[in-house]
Structure formats: structure tokens, C-alpha cells
Image 1 (cartoon, rainbow, N blue to C red):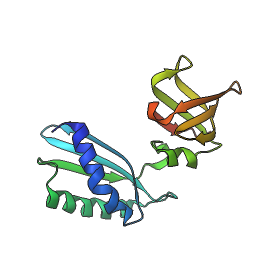
Image 2 (image 1 turned 30 degrees about the vertical axis):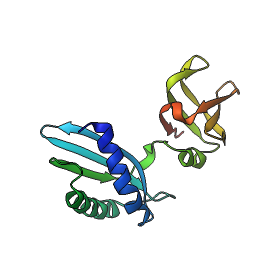
Image 3 (image 1 turned 120 degrees about the horizontal axis):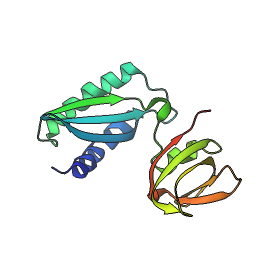
Image 4 (image 1 turned 90 degrees about the vertical axis):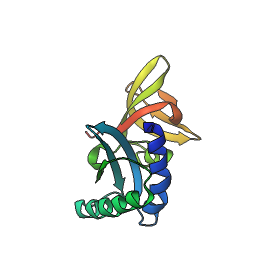
Length: 154
């Protein structure tokens, strides 16, 4: 099964499961490791601060759910963990949480001839993030064009 299809199926299955526990699904990654599929889930509370013990409990619960639904249809290794300090910024709400904070953004397609921006998120308008770069210039970046983003701790 294609990796993107697996991720979409996992997201569909787990979003409501986690939401019922007041937990956000921050990110999903899948890759082959030998004969197994390694499934890595990053989860957190909306305000942050999920514990290792809570991640371990979710790992057991999600493992049972995956076995019951059999959506992976192969042997897998499941890892559920907190995103920690390097929490990726993926959706509009992630960027809102980082308003007036410094971020680093990598793009799928260039904006103003650039593939990467470091700057402070000044506003989120519609589906665009506006970043003030080091020169004081505000640049609008469509969220859909962001390949990777994270907050920079200084």
C-alpha cells in the first residue's frame, strides 16, 4: 500500500479517537524498516505538555485499535511520542500558536524567489502566514506551500 494512502487512513482513524481524549495528532510518518512498517505518531495536548506515560498508554490503545481495524495489513512498529521543543507547524492553528514568535519555514515552491524564510509570524490571514523577515519586510506565505516549519528557540 502506498505510504500516502496509509497516512491518510491513519489520520482518518486516529483523529476522532485522539480528539475524544483531548489529544491532537500533530504528525504521522511511515517508513519501511526491514520487513516492518515503522509508524511514528506525534501527539500532544492543544496547550502542550503530554507526558511520556500518557504517550505509552496511547501507544497501547492505538496498537489495539490498529490490530482491530487491520488497516495496515502488515507487521508494524508503532511509536507514539511528544513533538517536544521541535514541534512541527503543519496547520493554521499551529501557526496561530506561534504568533509573534520566530520560525523557520521551508517551501514547496519559492515565494519572492526564496525557498526558505526565517522571521517572526506577524499575522495569519485566510490561508496565509505573514512573516516579518530580518529586514523588517512582511512576506505572505500560503500554508499549502509550506513543506516544513518549526519555531526557532533563541
